[in-house]
Length: 385
Image (tube, rainbow, N blue to C red; front, side):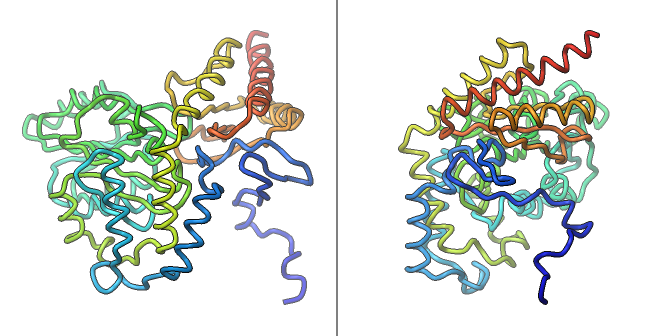
């Protein structure tokens, strides 16, 4: 229809964020200006890495776009098995099960484990994918206070000594960069209790080898199921369940989602293999860690509250609408895109969330620090008054 592209936004489209034009790996164009971009979760900027894009194009030319069938029927391909093998090796687990998105990886697990547990305990700020997945466990669900092992112990005491619980939590909470106390949870759970950890945001960036929060916290993988997304640190798309060979076999046999779902497009699998290789061989993890430490140290020295974790995430929740507007002006003044979002798990009124990447320049990092310190100073001055 003529003029359809120029219609006024409807109520449904106003619920979405405004479209942005990517200029290069760390900048976007917005309202005709270029800004340093700290939003999103592409922590290594692999989504625009030349080698990853080349692998995508070569995969498209060699394999086509889509197998158009479930892996349980005629849609299996050697590239999927290769990616699962490489993921298992990278994360140091027995096996990996590839699924078509990170969001669905938790559901593939809980469909398989339905009826195994007497109770499920879930962090009150857990990602929606875990909330949805918990329903498949077919047992009572208890929400515990955010990152609170004491509250977990209180709930377990009420359930009694015969309880067979599974605890569901994010490994790294993306709204502020805090890490789940997995070691405390492991000590609190009974010996036959399990952990299901959604490590979408920690996979590839936390731990000495990038194996996520289990490596960071130094816990064993016994009775631990880790799910990851390929769309964050690895910059591509898809998800995986990291587990034992026995449970991986069960997922492939019992999960309705796995058996009835068309798998990841083959070009994306090829791109994910290249991204995984880059994270393993290039000093991306170390470079991101250095830049994260630099920014958090500078913010902490200026009195800005930052989470005590190595996650490359900084958040700011303005107390009032006026504070939000002033903070936005300061960010724009320093050439930083004002990434204000409303997302489950974060402050109800919304917050500014900034994700550092290994590719941001020192000048861009300094601009972000300056804008945040000036904004926080405004808030503190008003509170003191």
